[in-house]
Length: 126
Ligand code: HEC
Image (cartoon, rainbow, N blue to C red; front, side, top):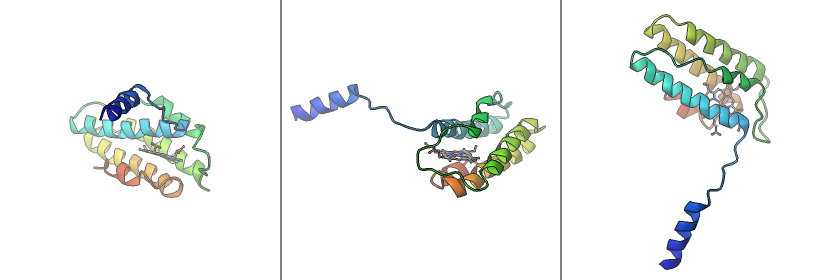
């Protein structure tokens, strides 16, 4: 009993840093972005500032062992194109459609490179 208490106390002191790649970190920001934009749209609010750092998708290092797909360049180009298009949408309806299209570009790449998060990503479509 006492020992398990000590173990709990110790493990809350020592937080082992989770090792994730720069690409995975960027992707978590991208998922957060999609979720936040969905909320903005639902509330009828303006988009958040343009996420300039998403350009890093071109160069961010991936987890060792993960291989880019044959059409990697094409996937990231269409993602960045649709991200720009999202910011050009004129009204809420256009933004909804545009967010869906953007999310589809996430999924297209994920089908080839990293299927794990697809379901989570999909739930953000309108
Ligand atoms: C050009 C390909 C590509 C596009 C486009 C892309 N992803 Fe990813 N994504 C990846 C790769 C590759 C990984 C694995 C990264 C690693 O492990 O280093 C990943 C990983 C992730 C992860 C898991 C991160 C973690 O915790 O390990 C999430 C969540 C994610 N992406 C969400 C998104 C969302 C949301 C979008 C669109 C807004 C998107 N991705 C667009 C290639 C892509």
